Image (cartoon, rainbow, N blue to C red; front, side):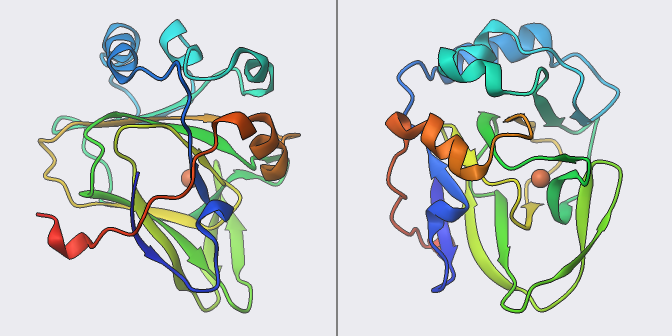
Length: 210
Ligand SMILES: [Fe+2]
C-alpha cells in the first residue's frame, strides 16, 4: 500500500489497514484468478463468483465463516473498459449494510489507480442505488488518498469512498474485494484480524512517481 494524502483530522486506520497475513501469496491468487475468473466477460463488477481456494487462503480460517459467500471481483481491460471514476459512495444498501471488506490486489495495482476516502466536516446526504449508497450533497474534503500495491488491506466500506483510474485502457486491472457479512462491524473486523494489522505506511509523494 502507498499513501499519498491524509486529512489532518482523520486517522488512516479509520479507513484502511494493511494486512500482514503469512499465507498471502499474490502469485497463487493470480493463478487462481486466471483459472477461475478471468475469462468471464459479462460484467466488470461481478458478485457471482464463488471463492476459490486461492482466495480462501488469503483469509484466516477462523474468519472465513464471517465473510460473504461470494467475493466481488473487479476486472477490466481494453476489451472491457469501465468508467475512469467510480463515484463517491458507501457499499451496500439499507437492508444489507456492509461495514468492512478485505481488498486484495491481483493485477495492475499501483499509483495509477487511486482510492480516495472523503471527509465530510458537516455530514453529507446520500441516495440509495442498486448496490451502493451514492453521495448526493454536502461539503467534502479529501480524507485519504492511497493505492494498493502488493498486499491485502482491511477496508472500511461504510466510509464515503471513490476510485480514479489513470491507466490506459489496454492495461489490465483486477482487484478482489471480499466483504464481511453485514453483522460484522468495522470494529469487529479489526478485532478478528488484530494479529495481522500492520501500521500505516509513511506518506509517499505522488508527484515523484511517474
Ligand atoms: Fe465501494
